[in-house]
Length: 144
Image 1: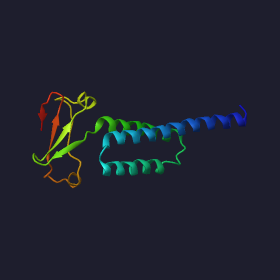
Image 2: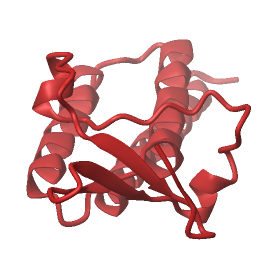
Image 3: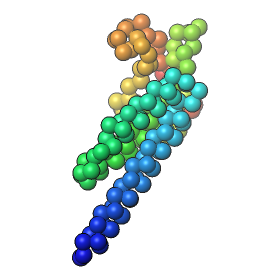
Image 4: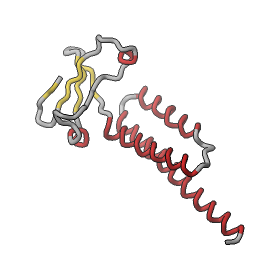
């Protein structure tokens, strides 16, 4: 191959990698919007965190490292869409009420190691005064 053909091949590879990175960035933003809709603080903090990770890795050129980062994007998107559920605090009962979507319910069963706990400033400090998490499955049953 000539030098120009080799350079053109690198440009095509770099262009497809750039497209994959931009696609991953957009997918993460859509996933965060889906998960955090209505939560202004979570929307803002997740936007800042996602952007910071992409900026931090903007100069990565090693193909293996780039591929690893793209796998991490896929895993982060999956976690946002399928690995985290939102709940609302019921102050009267002092519980978080969590409505499980069908994609979450499919991965939950009695034998699974599913762990649910509220994410609050107190959980970050390991406070034991956190409200219980109430899980409502699609049959109306609750577990604590």
